[in-house]
Image 1 (cartoon, rainbow, N blue to C red):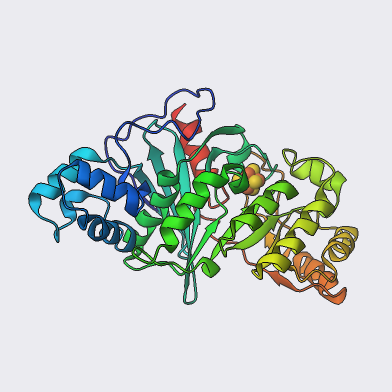
Image 2 (image 1 turned 90 degrees about the vertical axis):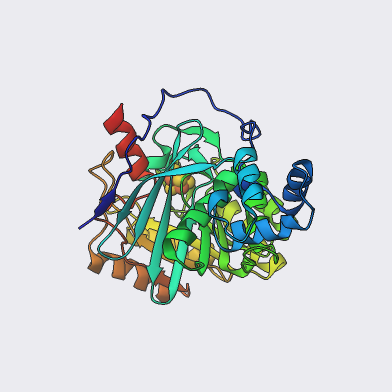
Length: 370
Ligand code: SF4
């Protein structure tokens, strides 16, 4: 049974506007997006000694304390100055927890737009799945995030702060971060890179980049940009179809005719960075789960050291005819891949009682309030 928490006074989502660039920051900087240098500049500008920057950075990034009034290690006057000079990037407006522990957070942004973040507990792992855009230009047929296309990029602060809210909710640091929520991460790479640099900074959370995974459904050239940045993170290719024809149908916003090129880019990523590259493949009954799809997929990844994660579809309300294959059919697909030399994991559905499919909660709330 899902648990709902809806704080009072939540503003209605405003009417859809034209795309807004992520560099249109509000005049007061969000605290969660400031690196050490930015904090130093801010504090010195407020008449505070520069050494306070490291102290504030640790409290925000390592302990996830976002409200300056709650930074009890700081003098009261500094807390008040900091509160007046910075702003939150996100306001939590709803939290749903599934019977399997998966927890979905819905946040309102300063302009009233909404994004989701998901916490996925599994054994001793706590994985946070962050969003990088409002909406998504890739428009996968099974995904609620893509229904309205791209609305805007998130800023570094809006990406970084999602993780800090989840960290505060959890009461401890998560073990893994995946940029696999709403949006195509590699189309907002500068802002995402800023967030990753905040998470891995030793004076803050000191998160290992090896435990961060960036996903893409996009273009090989963007994967090459990620390689050049040398962030030390892993790559997940959201493939969902093993050939151009099926991919054009299921992932219509991805560049046409580039399925094999994307896999080649993934192999290049693994070779040149030494980090993992995986293929994510959402299994949809009758759409991409035929034996010939398994054959095509096995050929694509053959000899490339790319692990395949099969994920049975989470139901989405805007496409009720799409459904996951039976568990027997999913196991048969995985077995066929395995027999052809691929390394495969068949994942289980998570949080299907809390609208856990990507973008589902934001879409339902947006439609409900329209
Ligand atoms: S699954 Fe990912 S890439 Fe596809 S529409 Fe949803 S958010 Fe975009």
